[in-house]
Structures are given as C-alpha cells and as structure tokens.
Image (cartoon, rainbow, N blue to C red; front, side, top):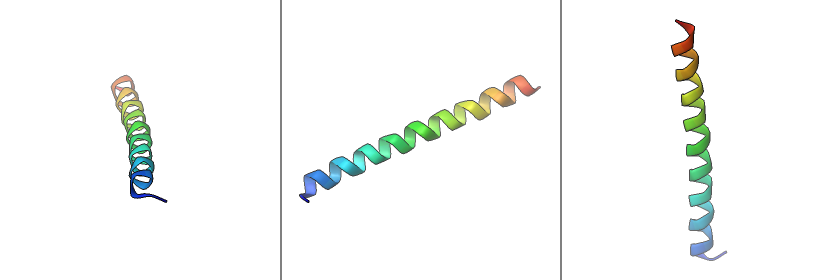
Length: 36
C-alpha cells in the first residue's frame, strides 16, 4: 500500500470514530438533561 493510501484510511477511521463519539456524547447529554 502506498503511504497516501494509508493516510486516507487513517483519516476515514478517525472521522468515523469522532462521529460515533460525538453521537454518544450527545446521547448522554440528552439523557442527563431529560433525567432531571
């Protein structure tokens, strides 16, 4: 694999992880704000 290929895959993976994390955080925040 070329280095550019690897960098693109790492970029995609990082973006996917950030997306999932952001959704999880938003879910927790929403639950906390509705729980009170």
